Image 1 (cartoon, helix red, strand yellow):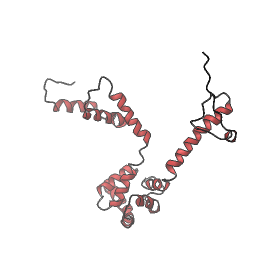
Image 2: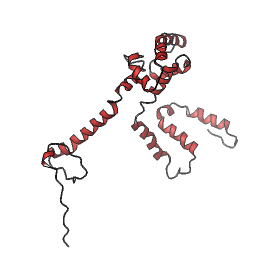
Image 3: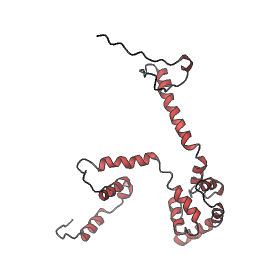
Image 4: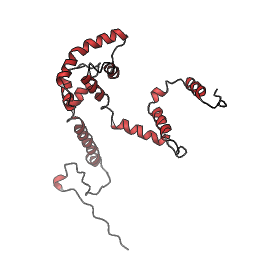
Length: 215
């Protein structure tokens, strides 16, 4: 029985010089370097560039406002950069302007008092958390600034660690234990700093079963 081969759909001549990604076109093997360049390489680059433009172009003002909360930046606490971010989250601009007038002096007093240099946004957030009654708007915007930059790839990595933790043999893990193991897996750098001997001693002393002796 003769099987009739399916006819390949060709790109119209008017579109031969362009990159076409239509699903109606049949995929053909890439033979020459020119075909590889036009059908694959340029297509991937176009997708990457369009995704970058889509993600960052429309939100550039807000992202610049986030950068203004970095103590190491050249535009730390720049009011003009923070305004678009403040408007987007409906903050009181008058209160924000008043807070910015006194916050730098407050930072200097805080650093002298606690002998601590504010070098990153997390230390700055801790400072605002302690004095959030006086810097309500700044605390709100700084909390948003340290939350937004979490990328999708970082989130995906945290979910992928569950494949390693909740295996077939651990399928009966309770949610609390699974959550604790996930935190340890995600925060590897912090977990490595823990003193294992101290943890074992604490567990041994707090356990009600005296027959358990950990050495």
